[in-house]
Structure formats: structure tokens, C-alpha cells
Length: 292
Ligand SMILES: O=C(O)CCC(=O)C(=O)O
Ligand SMILES: [Fe+2]
Image 1 (cartoon, rainbow, N blue to C red):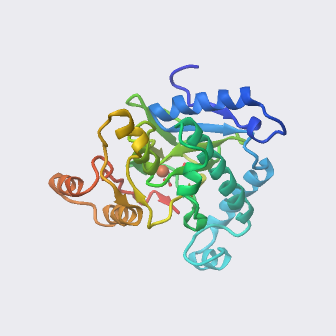
Image 2: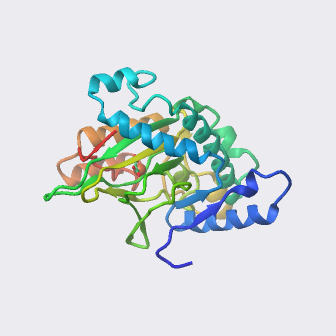
Image 3: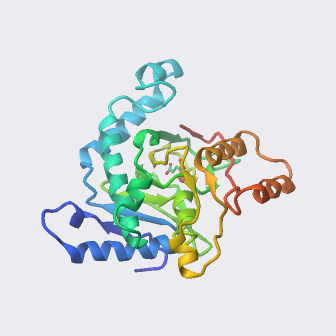
């Protein structure tokens, strides 16, 4: 596989009747390799029907043409800006998130169902629809460099391009076929695994002449969960924990604060970092090039 590629993993062995251990082993190998280096991979044969994916992107295009008032009226639930009609995509992605979490559990060599039991409350999962406007002469920033805070993110994107992942210090464009979804790991998995698996550093660059549409589904964690490196990746192997433990909801609040009140001075960022988590405070400033 060329080094500049983001691997596409065939998940069909996890859906077909029978054992298919060879196919599952192959998928686990590719995922383990990608997650230990940069936390990003793509998936095919993931069980979400292609028609639903295509329809979700079409609904999103229509939705973003609406006025704010029409958007509110046509969006299910309160405060969440996603178009009506994509609820079935949400439920498919919830199941898929659970499958991916289970594969990650196996890749990390954790006891069966460990992550599933740790992360059993699905009421914190979120999906957002995003439209990225075409680039202007002065700037092209859609979402600046960041890592996601949650467990696992699944992205459905159109073919316009713009999503990039940092791999060995280089930005790699991630363009996907229509039937392919993008997966990236978030900070929770990086902390639990004491850095064995990486939270992907990624960004979205706006493109010339065309809007880009995507959905990001955040397979999340309940806010009252305590997150810290697991003993399997610390004491049991004689490694020092690389992160201090934290309550997930405190971490989420800090991330929101970093976006709404980005510190002016680098010293302030360091101050926050020293108080709580090493590294994970380098939060993105999301600018207005993207609407969600
Ligand atoms: O739109 C995308 O492709 C990714 C969005 C993203 O990275 C995020 O919402 O955290
Ligand atoms: Fe992200």
C-alpha cells in the first residue's frame, strides 16, 4: 500500500453468516496499523445501504438552501441542525459505531465487550450535517486542524474533497467513493490506550467553486465517565500513564470554552494544560467557513 493512502477496510466479514475469521483478522490488522500511527481509516461493506447515504447528502443540500426559520421547522428535535429524513442513517451509524468500537476493543486486546460495557449509554451520540462554502480569495479554512474529543467519529462526505488527515507530519487528502465511509478515532480512545491508538489530527480545506457537504456522526461517551489510561497500557506493562484522568463532561466543557474563548496568549494554553491534560488542550478554533 502506498504510504500516502488511507486504507479502506472491507467490513463484510463482520456481517456475513459464518465465522470468516481470516477476513476479520485482515481487517483488524489494517485497522490496528492505521490506528497506532494516525487514527484514520475508511470502511466499505459497512452495512449502511448506498441509497440512504446518497439520499442523506441530497437532503443536506436541500436543507442548507432553507432560511434559518425553515431549517428549524424541518429539523427533528430541538437545537440539532440535521435535516428530517436522516434518522435511519443515524440509527445505522449508531450500530456501526458499536461494531467499530468492538473491533477496536479486539485490536487493543481488551477483555471481550470491555469498551461496550464502559460506553453503554447511547444517548450522548450526535450527528451534524455540514456545508462548507467554496473558498474565497483570502481564505480556504473550513475546519482548522483538530482532534475529535469523543470515541469514534464516522464521516459521510460527498466527492468534492477537502478532508485531510495528518500522517507522518504530512497532510493527506481523504477522498472517498460514494459507498465508503471515513472513520477517525477520538481523544477518549487515545487516553484509554495511553497513546497506543491515536486520536486523528484532521482538518477540512474548502474547495474552489463548489460547496462541500458532509455528515459527522460522533459515537460519544456519557459525561459522567471517568477517562484515564487503562492499567493494561500502564502498570501491567510497566509504562507511565501519559494523561491524567478526567471526567468526560469536564473535558467537553473545556473544549467548548477553548472554542468560544480561545486563549490570547500561549502561556494561558500552557496553564490549562498543566492543570489538567497534557496535549489534549490544543483545541481548534472553528471559523465560519463551515456551517453546521
Ligand atoms: O466534515 C468533515 O469531513 C469532518 C468534520 C469534522 O472533522 C468534525 O466535525 O469534527
Ligand atoms: Fe473532526
